[in-house]
Length: 320
Image 1: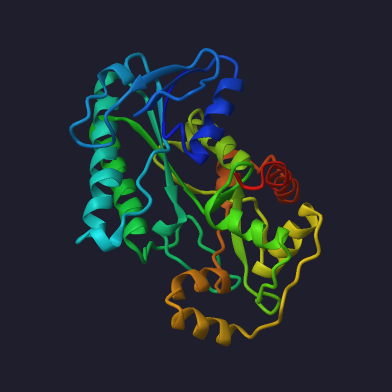
Image 2: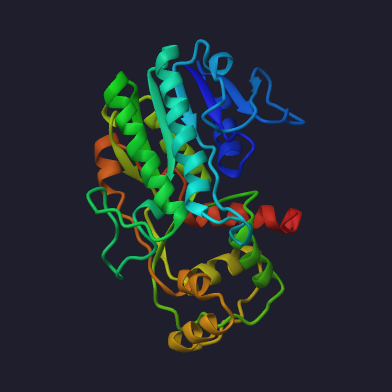
């Protein structure tokens, strides 16, 4: 199997590249804007100008059987952008459709798209997770662009016969994680008091190793064609539980304060961090039973093990 991987220098892409290189019988080519300092042995590299409708993919797609499209634009500088959705559409929708059409024309058989649970929305009622049949109601420009990208890719599949598969992922963590997950580990490592003890929500997460395992399966499994799959570790945690498990893995005692959630919501609004606070307070659960049944899959890495590996990486690198 000859695979073209986009987004190979990103967090998910790096994990996907490592997994592909470990698979017997798989040859890997990456499409990147800048030559990486180090590439695994045997990996081909094609330079591209970027994700746009003007990019020519002929060299990158030559001889490719499967495209795993992990590259995306996640955010824009809203203070400098008049229309964030238009900017995100240009990359996540238009450029993805363009790549898929060129992949079909070049003879690729399958196109696996790394999407986001944000295509469904931002929050679920406690105990009522998103499932494969749940209607999609994205709440922000990024989620809207990912949903439109899925729709555009399935349309290309219908037009050309390209086997399109979509995987919607919640927050991804693992060794090398940055952003909010790394910030939380830093706060716990420094034993800062955090006002999360009273939060009784549930959120789904996915370890990077579990996500890339499913993506690889979707690149091969005949039942995956034309479908959208949800992925997670198969276990949901409250914000307080996540803090306690991370603290245990970091070797520290958490300092969690029982601040009422209504107070936290009010404080979030006052300081202009209402959306960020809601992610800590609200639930976002996904039901992966259809994924597991249809593909005969289960997450190969237990959440506790994945959290321990992530914390070990953080202890060794201090988030750098």
